[in-house]
Amino acid sequence: MALYVLRLFVIMPKLTSRLMFLSGLPTAEKPAAKKQFLMSHSPENTPSSESFSTPEAKNDSWAKYKDYLARTSILIPIPPQLYKPLPEFIKRSVLLDFPMYRFDEQKDGKEALEEERKKNTDA
Image (tube, rainbow, N blue to C red; front, side, top):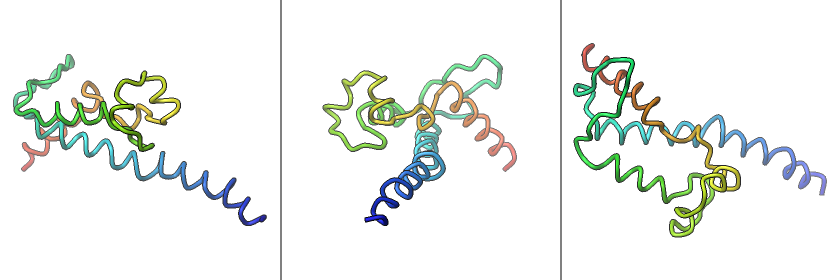
C-alpha cells in the first residue's frame, strides 16, 4: 500500500510534469508547427525589418495545420467536435493546452524565417 501511495503522489506527478514541461510536448509541438510554417512561407520573400507581418503563404499547409490545431487537444484526447467549440480558457485550464506549446506566428514565425534565411545565406 505504501508503495502504491508513493507512486501515486510522488512518482507520477514528477513524470507528468517532466513530459509536460521538459520533454515530450514542448520538444514536439513547436518544431512540428515550425516545419509546417516554413513549408508554407518562403524566407526569401520576407523583409528583415522590425515591423514583422506574416508573409503570404506559398501553399495551404500552414492553414491546414492551424485548422488541425484548432480542433485537436494537445494533451488530453477529446473528440474534435467537442474540442473546437470550447472557450479558450477551458482549453488552457482544464485541458492543459498551454500557450507555451503553441507556435506564435508573430514571434516564433519571425525567428523561424530569420533562422532559415541565415541558414540559406550561409550554405
